[in-house]
Length: 295
Image 1 (cartoon, helix red, strand yellow):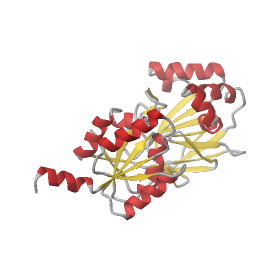
Image 2: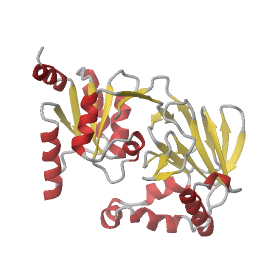
Image 3: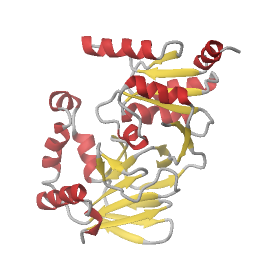
Image 4: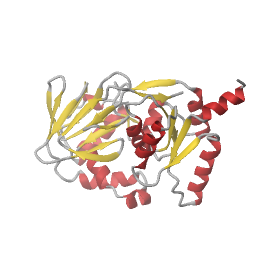
């Protein structure tokens, strides 16, 4: 088989899941660029929010060897829900605002370079944690950050971009945060006012919060925060930048195979930057890792 024929055969096995909602000249140009870069692959276009899951399930059923998510962390999370438990290989074309998971894996935001990674065939087995059965690849949160995600409207994000979350944070942080009770699978108990959970190192972009985290160590990294007020949040932010967040007495850093969170009244939970659920919640690992194409 010639090189050209091999490439053609490979293309038949790749499905690219993409949101076709191009409401601007820039968006239309981006979609056209993706189609040109991924020439020969099949495209499955989502029709509504959450449809990435359905398209991924369809791709697995149709026997695609590789399924690519063209989008941000939200799109990635949707597609992963449809791939979990299968042997289908996952690829990423990062076109979202932040793309934390792509950054974690070292995948370039240059689409040509990202496509080369997909064609390169280098695989990494990635742990797939979940909360109440819903999987996530990079991060999760209980309490403060989940409230921010839940309360930040689409219109505000459209107007302010990433600053919209800061605006909401200033409002949410002014209110008292409910106490959370944490019980790890190893039998240890903790309390916190909010919790950040890492499968990888990064949170919210280039912020390396979980410095001991590894995508394939079978452990989730937790930061438990005892205080929530403006001064504490500024200190936490400075601690992240300086790299000494976990040395603060108000912060408990730990690694665990799984844990549960309860509270007297329900508290929001987010996964991969999207509001998902409420407490009580159970965090654990799926038995089947995700096979991801990496540089």
